[in-house]
Image (cartoon, rainbow, N blue to C red; front, side):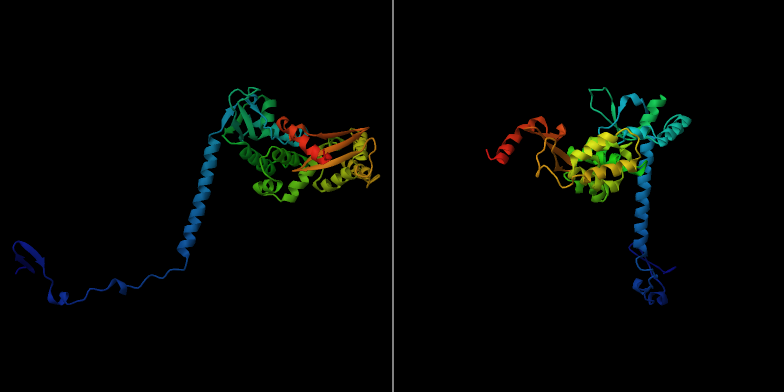
Length: 337
């Protein structure tokens, strides 16, 4: 045979030399495995996943901001959950923001709005999710407002607004309390604890804010601005109103608009609450007796004695018209009739 080839019926076979044929084929298992640090691959994979997720989130944010469009501010209305007090649009911080927007020819950071159903009463096409101050600034300057439009329900709107406002220009205790109280009254959350959990806040802080927002209107009006009421005053003011509501209201009306410093207003109201403390409508039924009722979720009602009549006062929104007839059997049971 030539060149190590054997022809059998036109089929060729390679026949290795004897010394090569005898040599055993090395087993793959004999090759030493490369040394690897334990879990390095898993750690690198986890880090890569986290980086990819961060990058994706950033891409989505940029895409959303690139999708911002110029909108006529007159077609946008404030949200019914809006929590800014009017004084927030008169403060130096707002004027500074307004100047920045004027110099830039518009708001650089977009606001967020959601489309409204056709046929809105005020003919507005959009509702603000967050960015009330930027919207107001553009409205007053006669500039179009840069906005991102996104569909969302009431609960999503409320949650985004609350978090955005807390991360930006801080809301006062009263503004936070008003926002939380409206959300609870509207049934967006089944309880104060669930509300606090959904926004990542301590339930005690939420409760104190709601307490401040639930103070009588006369007490709120006694302060130069409700935004000046501090969180730590929530419990003392509520206790004073409960101990002697008539005296506290009278003092609040007396000092309202006098220009008394905030701290002195607080002290005067607390002192009024201590006058005759301990007397309540359960012990006396005087002509001006007022009993403060806690309805839960930050809501309150007042039971007043006026001569021979007993008057229950509460926010009309707390009891819809279609449910008011349900009071009759409750009263009959209470009066045992």
